[in-house]
Amino acid sequence: MTSAISVVGLTRRYGGQRAIDNVTFDIEAGSITGLLGRNGAGKTTLLRIVAGQEFPSAGSVTVLGDHPVTNEHLLHRMVFVREDQRYPQYGGRFTGFTVRHAVRAASWFYPNWDAHLADALLDAFGLPADRRVQRLSRGMRSALGIVIGMAARADVTLLDEPYAGLDPVARQVFYDRLLADYAEHPRTVLMSTHLIDEAAGLFERVLVIDRGAITVDAAADDVRGAATSVSGPAIAVTEFTAGRTVWDRRQIGSQVSAVVAGALDDTDRARAAALRLRLEPLTLQQVVVHTAGVSPASQPSDTREGTSAWTGTF
Amino acid sequence: MDWNILIKVARLQLADRTSLTALPWGLLAIAFTVSLAVIGSLPGHHGQIPVGGLVAIYLAFFALGVLSVTHSLPFALALGVSRRSYYAGTALLAFCLAGVYGLVLAVLAVIEGASSGWGVGLHFFRVAYILPGPWYLTWLTSFIVLALMFIYGMWVALVYRRWNVPGLLAFAAAQAIVVVAGVIAASRAGAWPAIGRFFTTLSAAGLTGLLAALVMILLAGGYATIRGVTV
Image 1 (spheres, rainbow over the protein chains, first blue to last red):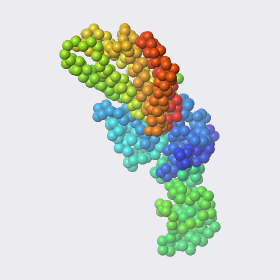
Image 2 (cartoon, each protein chain N blue to C red; image 1 turned 90 degrees about the horizontal axis):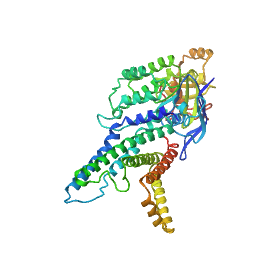
Image 3 (spheres, rainbow over the protein chains, first blue to last red; image 1 turned 45 degrees about the vertical axis):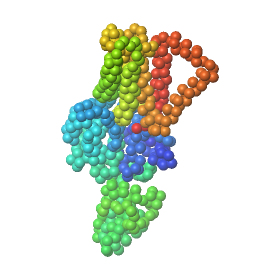
Image 4 (spheres, helix red, strand yellow; image 1 turned 180 degrees about the vertical axis):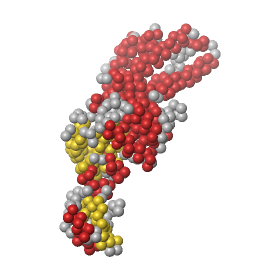
């Protein structure tokens, strides 16, 4: 496998805080990876370091086999529009920096820039080309970031919370266009988001970051089957979950709903059917919520009642 | 160094044409109008009164240097421009602007001379000692000083971006220390007469050479600063 992005022992400290704490991972070339985590988990910091906008305190980052920051040719094969991207903000009503200016400027720097795609995306998102960037709404700014990020056709495309503030129609546009364009022009996409279920269908692989550390690094399909919600009468649930790792358990009257870690096989399913239990695989989002709530050290053996502060989406 | 990228960076900066043109020429026009009105209203003939209004365009260039960094650095880095290319491209723009604007200043100085000070003996563009002599020396000196102000503005903005207010204060303090140390050293060595002689005998071209060396120092300082800037 060829790594597009390779991160080894990466740490970034701000004062005493470790925003990124000894993170190591590899991202295969030609894949779409989700970088998932809560607000402040370190997603944007990690992407900024990969893009060479921020410097690591320790550890190393290689992109396409080379170091960003210093390597001009490498930088032109990489695009990173941040969620809080700052655009030039000068000028008044007739002279300011508009959407058109931003898109045109971006087109100069990318050899594979696709002007047709950029126009199509601007149109699909309903972005007014003559609007000043300063006056765009949150969702429109996100859309502009997506237009630049996708039309750049950069080998390494870093997307930071592209969904932020987008309306449902625009989110669908993004989803469809990204998949269609990716199919025609494969590249390496690393995309951070906390709207996990929305984007779940895109990801081949997920990285979950929590308080600066990677807690999950796996194929998206494996994560989806990683836990199952088991619900039914209390006695039956208790019988079924005996000897298994239970992440969460909550009771309403005589009915219990428990989250069981680990994949279930056919025998398990037959047994659950016999016990009249309902089985539901957890979505990517639910798994991430659970892994974020359970500290990695205590995760395997911890059996808890559903009283913790983090309430899963059941 | 890829010149194509530098030109693209300069073009990105040029998107803000309004500031780049209106700020220096607008301020200069205001300063000129005021000077003309004041000098023109003075009774009788009055030799050379140094009005100093020309400083407006140099201050504007300092402001443009600051603005160039605050406006477009984050966006340029998002588009895969390296810090080095960004710096070199913006400096390239500074030199081009300084060259063109300096030429205009030189032409205006010639016109001022030919029209005996716009008809009222105004010495606005002809600054004694600093901008004397033939038009091309005026041009050269204007060019160097304009570029110097722009690049100094860039450095100030970069220091602020990297180290914020404490950095800016330390930067100002460091420059003050250099000046004070120079003054003390000169006094101790009793070198003031020699320094005075040096500057009075220095030709405009020699002065320009000194300023050019200063520009090189500022360029090196700004580049060293941008290498560690994060966005």
